[in-house]
Each structure stands twice: as structure tokens, then as C-alpha cells.
Length: 299
Image (tube, rainbow, N blue to C red; front, side):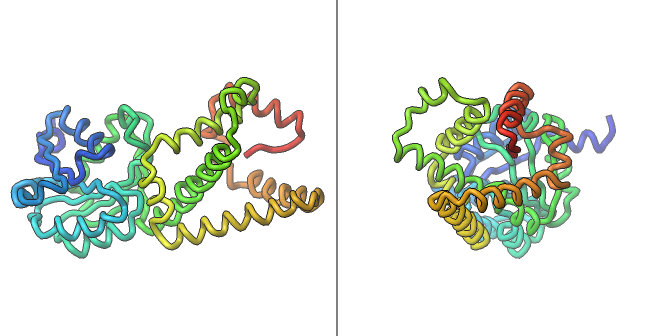
């Protein structure tokens, strides 16, 4: 075994701020079960911050979005310059800037693209945003990758721009769908008994949203001004298309559909078609059959 391997495999002292929260518990569990000495720091533990943070080799910030920057600023006062500092919140530009501004040591932004209900890193994506001295985090990145995680690198700014679409607008869209079904008092069990595969998939996705913490979901939508503005534009799109439906403007609706159809049938979905991320094979085949009958394209 090389000295580098030994360095990667040795036990480390880690403190997770917010380690009693759901995602904090996920990291605590997986790091501690492999021999790392993992401590947690919650609201009631700041009187022990000198010990919990000052002696740690790695500190991970796992707190709600609206508290992340303030916690980073507070925690940085206790950190040694040799301590590595990371956060795992779902926005990256503000936290990474705060870590760089307040801590002289190694800094990295992480965003696990999964919820705390998963059992392991296997098959899950983790976005990594470089801050300072990336090599200090190599053991942690190897830890994730060795357990089946997929690491995707980008800048904090690119991350936040893409998450507007991946998270904020999708959360809002599914939120609206769930709210509509609730207001209409739809019998979901009955609807599922005669549903298409794609409808079942959509209902499961919407249901998954409503198993999460309401405050977390709302914070994801409200996290940045860019997210709020994009959601407003999405709502305007809903309203514009709904108005065409109310007017029974068939030709305009077809034109709108064809514009979107063109977007999805060009190069935008080339890699998706190759990897077939969208749905399981049996669902995909059934959906294709339905769309062929309808002579339409389902994205």
C-alpha cells in the first residue's frame, strides 16, 4: 500500500455542523461506520465549539439554506488554518464565497443531488465546486466515488445557474401539481388504477416532493433572486398557455407545442437519449406506444 493510500484511508476527526439533521445524519453515519471520528455540532453545542471545530481536520456545514452563510461566518472563528471546510447546501456561490472570505484553509462546496432517504452513495451524483486547496479533499472525494457516487465538477456560478432549472422550477411545477390535485380532491388510488405508465411515474415524483420537509422545499424555491424570477416566468408560461386553452385556440396551442417539440428533438436531448436517463425501460416502452398512438412527443 502506498503512503498516499494510507493517507486516504486513515481515520480523521470530522465535525458536522447540523449533523443531527437528516442529511447531516447521512454523512455522519457513512463516515463514522468506516472508522472516522465524527462529532456533531448543533444549536446547543456552541459552548463546545473550540473543541468540536478547533480540533477537527474536516468541518462540514449541513444547515438550512438561509442559515448557511451566518453559520460559516460563526464557525470560521474557531477553525485552524489546517482545517478543511466544506458545505453541502443546495446553493453554492454564496456559501463558497463566505468560506473563502472567512477561512484561510482548504475550502470546497459540495451538493449531494439526492435526499437523505437514500441508503448509500451508490448511483448518486455529488456536485463539487472548487474553492481552495482541492487536494486536501481528495480523500473525501475518493470516499464518495469508492462507494458508487458520481462526482461532477463545476464552478459555483454554473451550479447555481443550472439548479434554477433542476431544482427551483421543478419544485414549483410539482408543488403546483400537488396543490391542484389536493384542491380538486382527486382520488389518486382510483386514478392510478386506470393510469398510463407515465402518469404513475409523474404521481410518484410529485408524491416524493411532499414527503420532504416543507420548509426545505420552500427554501429551495426562494434561495436566490434568480430562482424567484425563473419561477415567475414559469408561472407566466402556465398562464399564457392556459389562456389559449380557455379560448380553445387550437392552432396557437399546436404552434406552441411544435416550438417546444423542436427544442426537445434537437441536440438538447442527445446525451439523454443515449443514456436513457428519463425512465425505466418498461415505462419508456409503454410511453412510446402511447405517444405513437397519439402522434405526439412526450419529453
